[in-house]
Image (cartoon, rainbow, N blue to C red; front, side, top):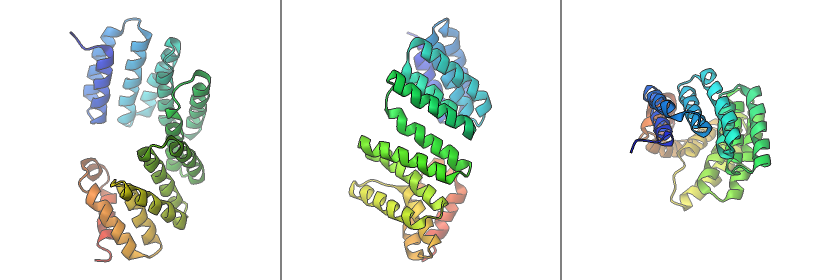
Length: 253
Protein backbone atom coordinates (compact mmCIF):
# COMPACT_ATOMS: atom_id res chain seq x y z
CA UNK A 1 0.00 0.00 0.00
CA UNK A 2 1.41 3.40 -0.99
CA UNK A 3 2.10 6.24 1.39
CA UNK A 4 -0.76 8.59 2.19
CA UNK A 5 -0.50 12.36 1.85
CA UNK A 6 -0.20 12.51 5.64
CA UNK A 7 2.72 10.06 5.57
CA UNK A 8 4.48 12.04 2.86
CA UNK A 9 3.91 15.36 4.63
CA UNK A 10 5.39 13.91 7.80
CA UNK A 11 8.42 12.59 5.90
CA UNK A 12 8.90 16.00 4.29
CA UNK A 13 8.92 17.62 7.73
CA UNK A 14 11.59 15.21 8.97
CA UNK A 15 13.67 15.94 5.86
CA UNK A 16 13.42 19.65 6.60
CA UNK A 17 14.40 19.16 10.22
CA UNK A 18 17.54 17.36 9.04
CA UNK A 19 18.33 20.23 6.65
CA UNK A 20 17.58 18.28 3.47
CA UNK A 21 15.19 20.82 1.98
CA UNK A 22 15.45 19.60 -1.62
CA UNK A 23 14.39 16.11 -0.56
CA UNK A 24 11.52 17.61 1.43
CA UNK A 25 10.24 19.45 -1.63
CA UNK A 26 10.55 16.30 -3.75
CA UNK A 27 8.46 14.39 -1.23
CA UNK A 28 5.83 17.14 -1.20
CA UNK A 29 5.76 17.12 -5.00
CA UNK A 30 4.78 13.46 -4.76
CA UNK A 31 2.15 14.29 -2.15
CA UNK A 32 0.73 17.11 -4.28
CA UNK A 33 0.02 14.60 -7.06
CA UNK A 34 -2.37 12.77 -4.71
CA UNK A 35 -4.32 15.60 -3.09
CA UNK A 36 -6.91 16.27 -5.78
CA UNK A 37 -9.67 18.45 -4.32
CA UNK A 38 -9.12 17.28 -0.74
CA UNK A 39 -8.79 20.56 1.17
CA UNK A 40 -7.31 18.92 4.28
CA UNK A 41 -4.62 17.18 2.20
CA UNK A 42 -3.86 20.41 0.36
CA UNK A 43 -3.52 22.23 3.69
CA UNK A 44 -1.14 19.57 4.98
CA UNK A 45 1.07 19.87 1.92
CA UNK A 46 0.96 23.66 1.98
CA UNK A 47 2.01 24.03 5.61
CA UNK A 48 4.92 21.62 5.20
CA UNK A 49 6.00 23.40 2.00
CA UNK A 50 6.01 26.62 3.98
CA UNK A 51 8.02 25.06 6.78
CA UNK A 52 10.66 23.94 4.30
CA UNK A 53 11.03 27.42 2.86
CA UNK A 54 11.06 29.05 6.28
CA UNK A 55 13.66 26.64 7.66
CA UNK A 56 15.80 27.34 4.60
CA UNK A 57 15.78 31.04 5.50
CA UNK A 58 13.18 32.06 2.93
CA UNK A 59 10.25 33.42 4.98
CA UNK A 60 8.83 35.50 2.12
CA UNK A 61 8.45 32.32 0.04
CA UNK A 62 7.02 30.47 3.03
CA UNK A 63 4.28 32.93 3.99
CA UNK A 64 1.88 32.31 1.05
CA UNK A 65 1.89 28.58 1.81
CA UNK A 66 1.10 29.19 5.48
CA UNK A 67 -1.71 31.54 4.46
CA UNK A 68 -3.09 28.88 2.10
CA UNK A 69 -2.93 26.25 4.83
CA UNK A 70 -4.72 28.57 7.27
CA UNK A 71 -7.57 29.19 4.84
CA UNK A 72 -7.95 25.53 3.91
CA UNK A 73 -7.76 24.29 7.50
CA UNK A 74 -10.53 26.69 8.50
CA UNK A 75 -12.62 25.46 5.60
CA UNK A 76 -12.44 21.85 6.79
CA UNK A 77 -12.72 22.71 10.49
CA UNK A 78 -9.27 21.43 11.51
CA UNK A 79 -8.75 24.09 14.15
CA UNK A 80 -5.39 22.89 15.44
CA UNK A 81 -3.98 22.81 11.91
CA UNK A 82 -5.37 26.31 11.41
CA UNK A 83 -3.58 27.57 14.52
CA UNK A 84 -0.41 25.78 13.46
CA UNK A 85 -0.54 27.59 10.12
CA UNK A 86 -1.19 31.02 11.61
CA UNK A 87 1.52 30.55 14.25
CA UNK A 88 3.93 29.76 11.39
CA UNK A 89 2.77 32.92 9.64
CA UNK A 90 3.75 34.85 12.75
CA UNK A 91 7.19 33.22 12.80
CA UNK A 92 7.76 34.06 9.13
CA UNK A 93 6.73 37.72 9.58
CA UNK A 94 8.34 40.95 10.73
CA UNK A 95 7.52 42.23 14.20
CA UNK A 96 4.40 44.22 13.37
CA UNK A 97 2.88 41.44 11.25
CA UNK A 98 3.86 38.84 13.85
CA UNK A 99 1.94 40.77 16.50
CA UNK A 100 -1.15 40.79 14.28
CA UNK A 101 -0.92 37.08 13.48
CA UNK A 102 -0.46 36.13 17.12
CA UNK A 103 -3.58 38.14 17.96
CA UNK A 104 -5.44 36.29 15.19
CA UNK A 105 -4.26 32.96 16.60
CA UNK A 106 -5.24 33.81 20.18
CA UNK A 107 -8.69 34.94 19.07
CA UNK A 108 -9.08 31.82 16.93
CA UNK A 109 -8.20 29.53 19.84
CA UNK A 110 -10.77 31.23 22.03
CA UNK A 111 -13.46 31.16 19.36
CA UNK A 112 -12.97 27.60 18.13
CA UNK A 113 -11.63 25.69 21.11
CA UNK A 114 -8.28 24.76 19.57
CA UNK A 115 -5.80 23.16 21.92
CA UNK A 116 -4.64 25.53 24.69
CA UNK A 117 -1.17 24.01 24.27
CA UNK A 118 -0.65 26.58 21.51
CA UNK A 119 -0.89 29.51 23.93
CA UNK A 120 2.55 29.26 25.45
CA UNK A 121 4.17 28.60 22.09
CA UNK A 122 2.57 31.68 20.55
CA UNK A 123 3.89 33.95 23.29
CA UNK A 124 7.28 32.22 23.26
CA UNK A 125 7.81 32.63 19.52
CA UNK A 126 6.62 36.23 19.59
CA UNK A 127 9.09 36.83 22.40
CA UNK A 128 11.97 35.70 20.20
CA UNK A 129 10.71 37.89 17.36
CA UNK A 130 10.81 40.86 19.74
CA UNK A 131 14.21 39.78 21.05
CA UNK A 132 15.76 39.54 17.59
CA UNK A 133 14.41 43.03 16.86
CA UNK A 134 16.08 44.39 20.00
CA UNK A 135 12.76 45.01 21.75
CA UNK A 136 13.86 43.38 24.98
CA UNK A 137 11.15 44.76 27.27
CA UNK A 138 8.46 43.48 24.91
CA UNK A 139 10.31 40.16 24.68
CA UNK A 140 10.40 39.87 28.46
CA UNK A 141 6.66 40.45 28.67
CA UNK A 142 5.98 37.75 26.09
CA UNK A 143 8.34 35.30 27.77
CA UNK A 144 6.80 35.97 31.18
CA UNK A 145 3.36 35.16 29.74
CA UNK A 146 4.77 31.93 28.34
CA UNK A 147 6.37 31.13 31.71
CA UNK A 148 3.06 31.58 33.53
CA UNK A 149 1.27 29.29 31.08
CA UNK A 150 3.98 26.63 31.34
CA UNK A 151 4.04 26.83 35.12
CA UNK A 152 0.30 26.22 35.23
CA UNK A 153 0.64 23.22 32.92
CA UNK A 154 3.02 21.41 35.28
CA UNK A 155 5.39 20.33 32.48
CA UNK A 156 8.93 20.71 33.83
CA UNK A 157 10.65 20.61 30.44
CA UNK A 158 8.57 23.30 28.75
CA UNK A 159 8.82 25.43 31.89
CA UNK A 160 12.63 25.10 31.78
CA UNK A 161 12.63 26.32 28.17
CA UNK A 162 10.34 29.24 29.04
CA UNK A 163 12.50 30.28 31.98
CA UNK A 164 15.66 30.06 29.90
CA UNK A 165 14.17 32.68 27.58
CA UNK A 166 13.37 34.91 30.56
CA UNK A 167 16.92 34.56 31.90
CA UNK A 168 18.40 35.34 28.48
CA UNK A 169 16.29 38.46 28.15
CA UNK A 170 17.04 39.68 31.66
CA UNK A 171 20.74 39.46 30.77
CA UNK A 172 20.10 41.42 27.58
CA UNK A 173 18.46 44.08 29.76
CA UNK A 174 21.49 44.04 32.12
CA UNK A 175 19.21 42.88 34.94
CA UNK A 176 21.90 40.45 35.92
CA UNK A 177 20.96 39.77 39.54
CA UNK A 178 17.41 38.85 38.51
CA UNK A 179 18.77 36.62 35.75
CA UNK A 180 21.06 34.84 38.20
CA UNK A 181 18.31 34.34 40.77
CA UNK A 182 15.98 32.72 38.24
CA UNK A 183 18.78 30.80 36.55
CA UNK A 184 19.99 29.33 39.83
CA UNK A 185 16.40 28.30 40.60
CA UNK A 186 16.11 26.54 37.24
CA UNK A 187 19.40 24.72 37.79
CA UNK A 188 18.43 23.64 41.31
CA UNK A 189 15.18 22.15 40.01
CA UNK A 190 16.96 20.47 37.11
CA UNK A 191 19.68 19.04 39.35
CA UNK A 192 17.06 17.69 41.75
CA UNK A 193 15.41 15.90 38.82
CA UNK A 194 18.76 14.61 37.51
CA UNK A 195 18.16 16.75 34.43
CA UNK A 196 20.52 18.96 32.42
CA UNK A 197 20.05 22.66 31.67
CA UNK A 198 23.07 23.52 29.49
CA UNK A 199 21.65 26.72 28.03
CA UNK A 200 20.85 28.02 31.50
CA UNK A 201 24.38 27.09 32.61
CA UNK A 202 25.62 29.18 29.68
CA UNK A 203 23.52 32.15 30.77
CA UNK A 204 24.70 31.89 34.36
CA UNK A 205 28.31 31.76 33.16
CA UNK A 206 27.78 34.97 31.19
CA UNK A 207 25.93 36.68 34.02
CA UNK A 208 28.57 35.86 36.61
CA UNK A 209 31.26 37.04 34.18
CA UNK A 210 29.41 40.36 33.86
CA UNK A 211 29.61 40.69 37.64
CA UNK A 212 33.30 39.78 37.67
CA UNK A 213 32.64 36.61 39.66
CA UNK A 214 34.89 34.47 37.51
CA UNK A 215 34.99 31.35 39.66
CA UNK A 216 31.22 30.96 39.32
CA UNK A 217 31.42 31.88 35.64
CA UNK A 218 34.04 29.18 35.14
CA UNK A 219 31.98 26.58 36.99
CA UNK A 220 28.85 27.07 34.91
CA UNK A 221 30.76 27.49 31.64
CA UNK A 222 32.46 24.15 32.26
CA UNK A 223 29.09 22.47 32.84
CA UNK A 224 27.66 24.00 29.68
CA UNK A 225 30.71 23.20 27.57
CA UNK A 226 30.80 19.57 28.67
CA UNK A 227 27.30 19.04 27.27
CA UNK A 228 27.15 21.41 24.31
CA UNK A 229 30.54 20.35 22.92
CA UNK A 230 28.91 16.92 22.40
CA UNK A 231 25.90 18.42 20.62
CA UNK A 232 26.65 18.17 16.89
CA UNK A 233 24.10 20.81 15.92
CA UNK A 234 25.42 23.29 18.48
CA UNK A 235 29.03 22.65 17.44
CA UNK A 236 28.12 23.24 13.78
CA UNK A 237 25.79 26.22 14.23
CA UNK A 238 27.23 28.04 17.24
CA UNK A 239 31.04 27.99 17.04
CA UNK A 240 31.36 31.46 18.57
CA UNK A 241 29.27 30.55 21.61
CA UNK A 242 31.17 27.30 22.04
CA UNK A 243 34.51 29.13 21.88
CA UNK A 244 33.25 31.64 24.43
CA UNK A 245 32.26 28.82 26.78
CA UNK A 246 35.70 27.27 26.38
CA UNK A 247 37.28 30.64 27.21
CA UNK A 248 35.14 31.13 30.31
CA UNK A 249 35.62 27.55 31.44
CA UNK A 250 39.38 28.15 31.47
CA UNK A 251 39.14 31.59 33.06
CA UNK A 252 39.75 30.44 36.60
CA UNK A 253 41.84 27.44 35.66
